[in-house]
Image 1 (cartoon, rainbow, N blue to C red):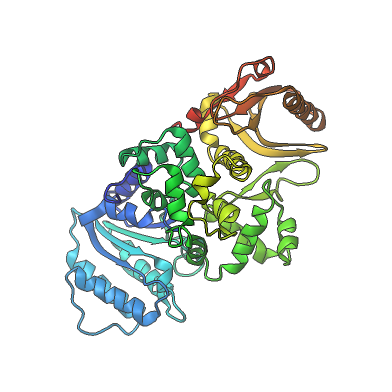
Image 2 (tube, one colour):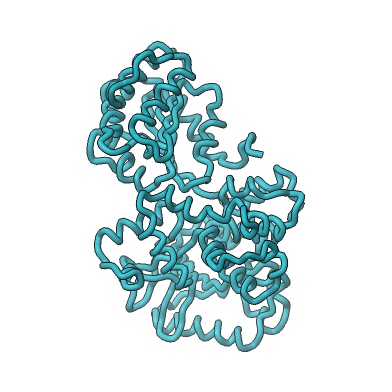
Length: 474
């Protein structure tokens, strides 16, 4: 299933552009585990790679250097004597590449799982910096691509490096998970007979992570897939949670503690609230940890407008669909291998679907703006907390209009009843009164299948449906 690349049109164009730029390019690709970084590079360049090597997970310096010399051997350069250190190794690589270089052809070097190479006292990053500064950056047809899942390490040691690699990265590429449109494209490519509601529910479970999607079986229903992957004793996604965070962070425990704290507060928490919840200080270390979780697409930081939470000190919210699913259902360690199939339509699963649908809306703001036809208008989105009222999504536009959005999950057309409509109207009134906004308010409902027609739905000016969320972002 993984022999063909689906989606990633923009990233493919950029990588080919860098390869043909006619100057030395140093590209850093980062993104969470299983998002498809290695696959993307290998599929784009295939037999065009001049040299490629990958780090050994949890390997020591000796193992990493052995991986390097083995890669040289694969590319036709047997090594009689092991290099004594990474400076020696990169000197070997320089001699190898110099013989391979052709003026009319890009020299493409790919170093995968880069964080693995920086073992204790290895000086790998220093040697890489010297290799780039002293020789590779002077070659007009050089494309050096480095890649790693440990996003915080990549940001600190490569992209924001203050040593020999300071400002040496010519391009950075944050590879994110698929959106709903790309997920549908992927599943259709591999013969899944699922409708958009089933695809959305799959997305709620594992997000748009290509490798996770590759584990799905088109001959099974979604419920059967979930039981097989999560609830069977040897399910392939059953132990992925700790593997994910161990790959992302050298010491994953404090990050998991933050994620679990955020899971307990679906609307999000301030930095001070997180610090109190996990029993630590709201200091610079916590701020860096939170930023690392944001960089890894596990958590989002979003602005909140009100009198008590400043824009600078907004809220952090758990947004990773797999983590949400795992914490919601897997911590109980059910031994029922048919937990999902037998639990459909229960309040626990229905509550989770409602929460996940809200998260889907928050990760598809671009599609919402497309549906509202406001792409050409400058806009900002945020959450609002007022006295006795809260609105999860406000889209404030430069044309002095505001969309106040309400997300509601129901597979059938959603029935907006009198009490709920009255509460929604009241929140809008409180928003106008407490913010002093005098422009136009556009009540906006985001649902799966629209609203059932009644006297209250007629007052909802704008409706966005699941089909809109599946739109291709522009």
